[in-house]
Image 1 (tube, rainbow, N blue to C red):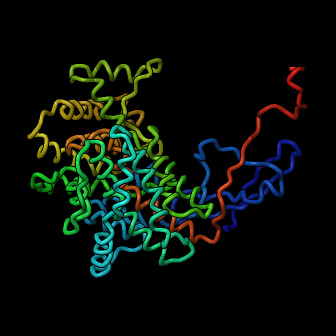
Image 2 (image 1 turned 60 degrees about the vertical axis):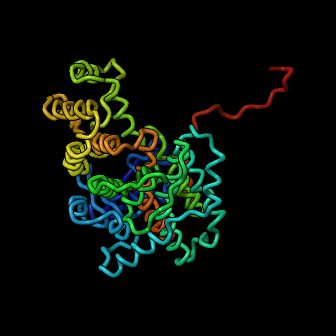
Image 3 (image 1 turned 30 degrees about the vertical axis):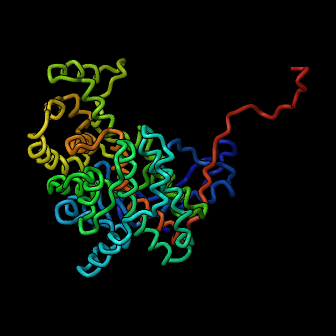
Length: 432
């Protein structure tokens, strides 16, 4: 605790409520309200938890005003330039960048866990081919506890480690199997000589009848996207993982809950919404019309992929990914029809110069560029959120591991402000 104090006035009694604050290493201090109800009989009220710190964490720091994102103290710009997704996974889970030997050992462990129990593959046949891939992925991950119950004792550090390595290694294989099932194509087994993202692309796009060579630009783009999406503090899905995990449930169930939360269009579906928006605009000549619609408060149309709830200046991930987006379009866009990509680039330029967008800080965010990249890589819209889930799994795992070891952790139990009827007496049905 710091020596600072904070006061509230009880509106019923007029009594002053003294509250202590705790300082953070970076960012706002927090007001300790843990005894507010027991001593004063009042709750705090914060719909959406926009001003509530639900935990103390050492993993990710965001400064939305300045456009800062750091993993374990390392700026995202440095990690995106110099690191790999596998190295970032190690950093998020263990708190420090690995030595060469530590990274090689960790990477080999992930490669050794990529295969699925054959029974899992039979599970996919229970889904209709047009089932949404997120439904399949969430369901399969939840079922993992039935196959890997030897690692569900959350109090055992060795169990937590094996679980972490398994889920990070197998989530691409699960995602690829869901994709192949939707295409009615044979499942493709992982190739452990390939790197993490190359292996994913191989499982997605290869078929048994032909040879397939992973494009290095595609693998590099995917690796960058995964680094940028690996964690993002206490967002909806991460908070869901922590809340589910706080009950002591097995970690596979907690991760499955996070996947389900991510599925929501207000969370993980934003990059898919960007492509839908571009398809609605349709042609560069329609851009001015749709920009005008976006400015009209009475019009429900919104330009998706611009602005961010947390970042009030710019999204640092978007600055990083913009260059990669252009590289991908230059390399891969030459091989296919590109009107949607050309439309996106023109819309980007207009938004970066329009005073309306500049004044409201509505700059292109990471979802704007990631949707375009996924489209260029040949990933269908139905798989966009799945790709997000693959990248974010390590963040969920790191947050879950931190929560389990936190001595202050207790089962999550938000309270409410009740505004329903007062006490009423039951009436027999004949008297109603």
